[in-house]
Length: 269
Image (cartoon, rainbow, N blue to C red; front, side, top):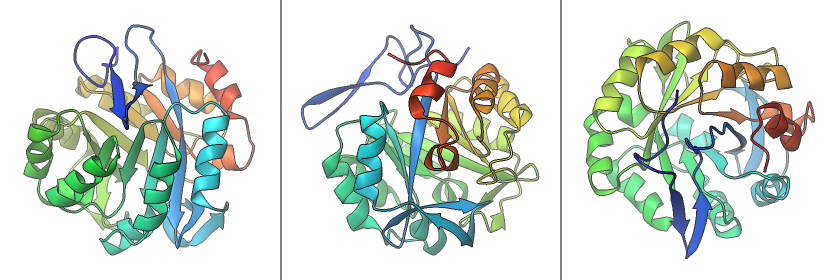
């Protein structure tokens, strides 16, 4: 059984005076479907296997974010893709505009390389920061941020061929996702975001065994990403024990609606 974001009872994230339902609600046993808003050059895009040059564009970020909220999204997954590749947040203005425009919890990754970067974003209004390269290069970053901002760090473990990859999925880190997840759990990570790059963006289905291995190895939530093409894929990730799934291309390509995905796993209101 997966664990809630925060220990104990169901919690709410609060920003600008608004209370929000947590991404994971242990008491109700709910699995969340989280729309992705991946931003490159100021526009929403989806990449195939994380490779530049494969992108398909889906418009303006605030418009996309509002679309998913109107459709029933309880939180949003934001990624500064240029930041992930270049190591600095080049889409900061677009991200800020989304944060200002929405009133649901947000988690943000891409180009967050230092403790100061993370803290600035948390104080700016992001509810959770996603650390990938920074966590691999300096694991103590997770502990340092978590000490003053408990339950705010999600560690991104992106994997190709069973190995964690960093620097925008271009370099191997020499560690397996399971070993990495155990390490970051000890350092205070609130959750693991696991992206299977082998299936990411291809709309050809999910690989559940790596997700199941992570769920079995840790006591913190595992959020799955990569490969969701059908409602059956969403159900498969829930059955594998994931706490939530980030969905991008399948929603943007109208393979199914957000409401249909929520209904498929019994998470609709």
